[in-house]
Image (cartoon, rainbow, N blue to C red; front, side, top):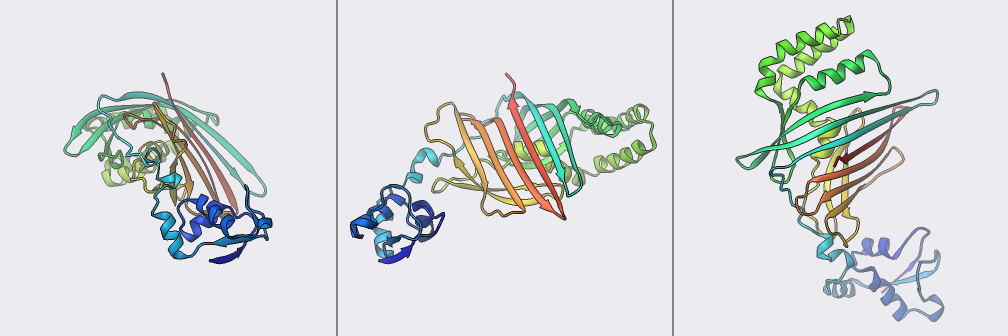
Length: 320
């Protein structure tokens, strides 16, 4: 056995994870069986007190019992993705705050998104996505132009694999055929010289399918709604990667089931595998247990870069 002096902040769970003991209850059991009466553990660990840790062979024996809480099958579900005939409308809010030593700026954008399953295609699913009802608290001409430009592209065509992960984002052939007229209408609505620059860049992205697909994969709704939520769970966790901030900084996330006692809805909680003072992230997804389709999303994250701290709050709620 090993004698360990408990550090501030350590728990049975954290120490068990470090020594690869699956069930923390056995750490307490082992310690209490071998320690002096005055060192007995009842609930929480007390810093600077001794903790007796089992050796590798004893840890292997405990793990062979396969009774750790996170082994519960309900904490390791195979999440389905059954979107056939799916059609829902969501209310979306995206709030951004930017802070530096001298200034604080905030903007909130709200809109609705309709997600409709269209068909199976080979080993994939095709969805149509419509964005509408934009409201931007800044109310600027450029914000109105951006909103109108997005609406003019409805619907976007989303192709996913069998687990709901994005394969491609594109425009329908009808939109491509009509794009010249779409741009002419936007030019008439927004004759400003800065609008012309925006619309020229808009056209460049639209006519280059690869650039368009790449940019759309980073759209805040698309990347969150079609995130890799249904990756395999092992020992109560699954893993995925997401991007945050204007630089699309990649973040490695772990995902857990919030409560094993679920029925019609299953809640997923996401946290970073590692984080520091420069970045934070928390995500909460509510899925339909039977279809695996998203009902609600609540994501908050912050990132500190180049003396500026950016906060982002993204919420999505299924409309009845």
